[in-house]
Amino acid sequence: MNKLVKTQDVTYEYVRRDDDGNVENIVNAIEGINISIEEGQMVAIIGHNGSGKSTLAKHLNALLTPTEGTVWVDGIDTSNEEKVWDVRQKAGMVFQNPDNQIVGQVVEEDVGFGCENLGIKTEEIWERVADALKSVDMYEYRNASPNRLSGGQKQRVSIAGIIAMKPKCIILDEPTAMLDPRGRKEVINAIIRLNKEEKVTIILITHNMEEIIGADKIFVMDKGKLVMEGSPREVFGKVEELTEMGLTVPEATLIGKKLYDSGLPISLPVLTKEELVSEIGRARLSKFR
Ligand code: ADP
Ligand code: MG
Image (cartoon, rainbow, N blue to C red; front, side, top):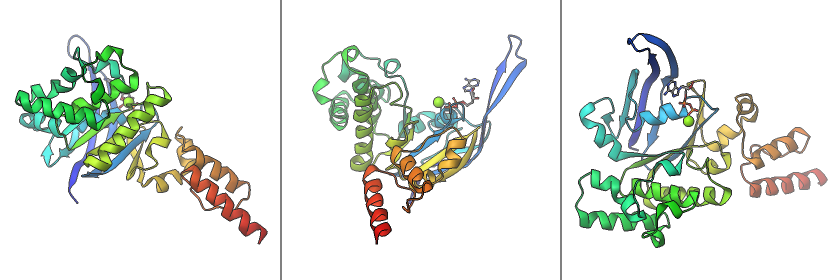
């Protein structure tokens, strides 16, 4: 399969200088990161606050370039300054706060903004905007004022703005963190649909483990390092290690683990409520046999 994103030994230092240009302070935000993401995958990045998730994410669309090491997006080295816009067109980014990402007075105009910057013809922009809004189920709001939308709707408009640029990949940095449960659900459903139906590669940073049960792969960051990677089943199977890093696991996984620890012979890990129910049923049957 085609590697869409690849990093090799990526390290990034934030360097703070005083007014005379002398180095005051260096923060080694990420260190020795090696990841690769295949086209069409949905992957998640999790980790405690300050573990380097956002710093890594910003490398994946050339908002930052490595202090050491290399990042390739669709084969392009992101430190090639002439290719920065190619990289950003391939990998778009959605941030946490929906209010900071809205630039237009009307939804349609907002969604078309990125395409205008790419120099796409007006007629094609309208077509792309309509398709993008449909893909996140916001088409009926095309003439609305973004200010009047809910957080979940605003976030979907931001996603549409990226989608209209036809990227291969969308990086979402805690897109649901500021939303209410309903907004979260709307945004996550839109993301999953883009991945499954439109084959957009998704890189999702989140603290909400329920959102990533269906991911192809999870990367776990701790103190600037990549400390674990695997399928949701592999990663969430390590409840104790995750807890030590200050991370949670899906609710059903935690309940399953507690039942197992208290003696119920179920197979771990369970990821969903459905799996939990069927495992409990199986374990009880075997107990009474
Ligand atoms: P996360 O997204 O996982 O919370 P970040 O990538 O934001 O982690 O931060 C990683 C480390 O880099 C932290 O120690 C943080 O304080 C530091 N950091 C982040 N942004 C900056 C910045 N602009 N200047 C200096 N240090 C920063
Ligand atoms: Mg962050």
